[in-house]
Structure formats: C-alpha cells, structure tokens
Length: 253
Ligand code: F6R
View (spheres, rainbow, N blue to C red):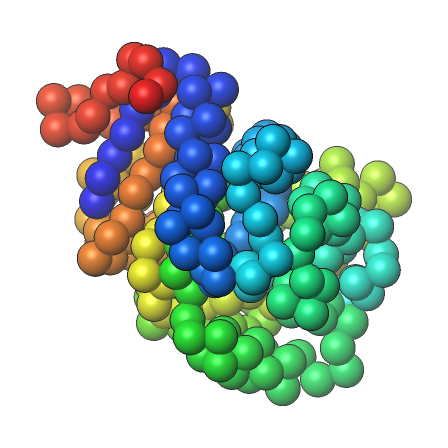
C-alpha cells in the first residue's frame, strides 16, 4: 500500500486527479471505476478542467461507478447517475454508452447485479478504481461485516451511513438499500486509488492502513491489494501512528 500524506485537502485532490489524468493520458481507452460523495466533488471539477484545458479526452474511456441507491431511477436528481451526469459526464466528450452505473429502479436487483458484473468483465476489468471511504470504513456501500470476497449485490445501508448522507434527502426518504460493487469486485481492479480528506475519516483511515485485516473495516482489505494508493490530507491521517513509514508530501509535484 502506498500512503501519501499532503498538508492540505486541496493538494491531496490535485494529486489524486493528476493520477487519474495520467492514467487516461497513458491509455486513452482506460476503464475507470468511479465513486461519488462529497470527497469526489473537487476531483470531478479537476477532471472537467483537465478536459477543458485539452489535457485529456474521455472519448475512448469506459466508466463503472461503484454504487447506486436502490429504488431511485437514473433520472432522479438524487441518484448517483444524475450526480455523475452533472459533475462529469455532461461536461466531457465521453460516449454515454460507455458510462455505467447499476440501475437503481431495476425490478430485479439480483439480475441487475449479475448484469453489472458481466459488463465489467466484458470491458476487460477496471484499470483504475477511485475510492472514497465511509466513516465506518465502508468502500462502495460495502458496510462493515461485508464479505471481503463479495460481488455486486444489494446491501442495507447502516444508520451511520444513512445519517452521513441524510442531507441529500431533505424529505427524509433516504433509501435503505444500495446496489454496490462487492469488495471482491473492487479488489480485481488493477489499481485502487483511495482519497480521504478531513478529520471525520481519521479513525476509518487508521483502521484501513494500520488495523487488522477485517471485515469490520472493509477498506482494510486494501492491505491485500497488489497496487493500492491511499491519498490523505493531514487531518484524515491524524490517527495514524506509523508516520515514519509514509510519504509526507509537503509540496505537490
Ligand atoms: C460512493 C461511495 C462511498 C463514499 C463514502 C464517502 O460512491 O462509494 O463509499 O465514497 O461514503 O463519502 P463522502 O465522500 O461523502 O464522505
């Protein structure tokens, strides 16, 4: 695991976005695994800027998002599909047919999960999987005690996750379930790139990097990944103990 600690969240974001840009520059037909959530908002702003500046084209890129709320249609503005359209897809030259998220209002979630797995395999697997982390250590919506070999499936959201995202659902109708890539699905990505910023993530980050490998903190499975990069700001790194082991990057490259 490569752990990079930046003194500010802005620098952590710049570095993470740069790694994604470099992936697409190196391979124009990259398959990117994407994440949503507040942490990723500045990442998509940086990718839009890189596209506007002519640094990258998404014309041959394929994307698979980690998850979608069960029951929300793609047209629902609170869906992750709508979020991705607004934050990235509508602003760049990506082929809509190459953008994939689980369909939240599917009548058959089990079949939809199997379809999603098959689509990832048909695309040749994921080159770079962007990950955030929940305060409870979830990746995607693989909540604590998720099987570390799980595949795309329906997961119940924990009270903590529902509380963290409740502000997106002011009418108090936050979905109770999500369709999410499994931990095993995520682990098959050729490179996992996690970004965590802010003090609320410090406990989960410490458990991920220095804790025991455990389904109690699904993100800790990254300890077993052959190529995992974890980008942190100082506050998200605040509960780490083995500081001498990590790259502390004062200046962005
Ligand atoms: C969303 C996802 C989640 C988020 C996590 C952190 O697609 O995969 O695991 O990355 O809940 O969310 P924020 O960034 O809002 O704290």
